[in-house]
Amino acid sequence: MLWILAGKEADRPLASGPMPQPTPSQISDFFVRFGLTIAAWQLVESSLFNIYARVIGARNHDSLSASFHTPTNFRTKLQMTDEAVKRSNIDTVLIDEWNKINVSATKRSKRRNSIAHSVVVFTPTEKDSSRQLFLSPNMSDVSRFSGFTPGEIIIQSELDGIRKSFEALNEKMTMFLLKIRRPPTLPPPTYP
Image (cartoon, rainbow, N blue to C red; front, side, top):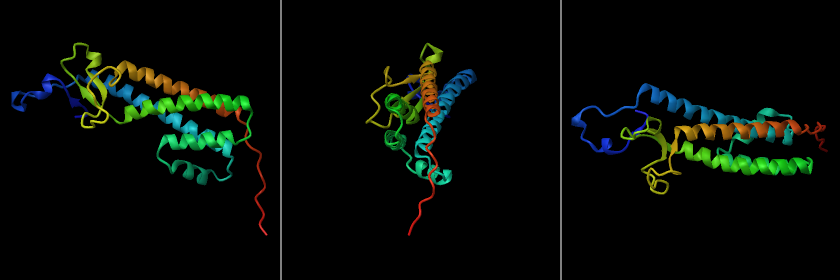
């Protein structure tokens, strides 16, 4: 089972028969949306690396990639990229554009984290079948869970909107990347 059963059905004794299950269509609709949303975020992370690589201008892609991907936290990578962009001697208009992207990426990363750290919940008693499967903060995490309330849960249609916001952020990051010229290749340093 890839979901937690919630509502009156979750409290009934197991001896009373099989537990309710979402329909195959509900499962497909929900998990396709969920997967597409996560995939859209991966494009954002890839674009962040490409921006970082462009402004750093390292000649050794493997070492640059390894060092960039060592921190596992997106916010740390975003801070690294922010510092690199601001010190890359690009035009102030591009710095202003980057600042807006940075704010948007910070906001979207919080939304991504709420998705990644949620559990899938199935409430068969919900009348609207499109709202029977949803994401919720983990119910065992009392610091995050305060009930199945709007703003706390993410329903299927909201996943579509979140995915679109991730795609739009990726598009802005890609367009920003195309505006940054590659730094000139410097000769290797010489040492005495």
